[in-house]
Image (cartoon, rainbow, N blue to C red; front, side, top):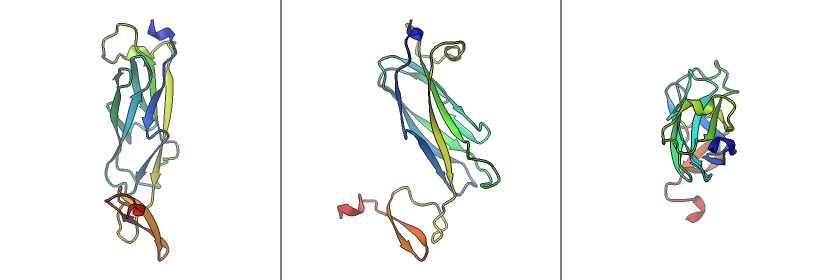
Amino acid sequence: MAQSVPPGDIQTQPNAKIVFNAPYDDKHTYHIKVINSSARRIGYGIKTTNMKRLGVDPPCGVLDPKEAVLLAVSCDAFAYGQEDTNNDRITVEWTNTPDGAAKQFRREWFQGDGMRSASILILSCSAFICPKFRRRPSSTARWSERSKGFTVLIPYPFGNRNDA
């Protein structure tokens, strides 16, 4: 039975931290990839420390060996500085599925004393807004330079700055 064998490894991309950038007056979504790098089929479930503000879609599922899934992690609008975000975490918990089980998630796999593993991703909220443009930095920003006391991010959509 697969439950007597310790669950194999998974990989997450990113592997440790997700940063949501300001402003927080509307919903932000960040995608993470979960990869089953083990040789067995696993069932996974996602937990958050703040279910009111943080969401994950899909929150659970089944992955065959070497299969991956893209998860949408969302952070609803909130008043930055008025809510504690220091302990925001997402936990990916997984276990081997029973031998012969259908590829359909079953919550009972996580109940009882069966073997499970967990990986924690830290969520961070950044208050940085580029003052010159009054907006979030571009996701294509490759390098920065100092200008009048604040950082201006300069996007390079055609590769790295050093490629030119």
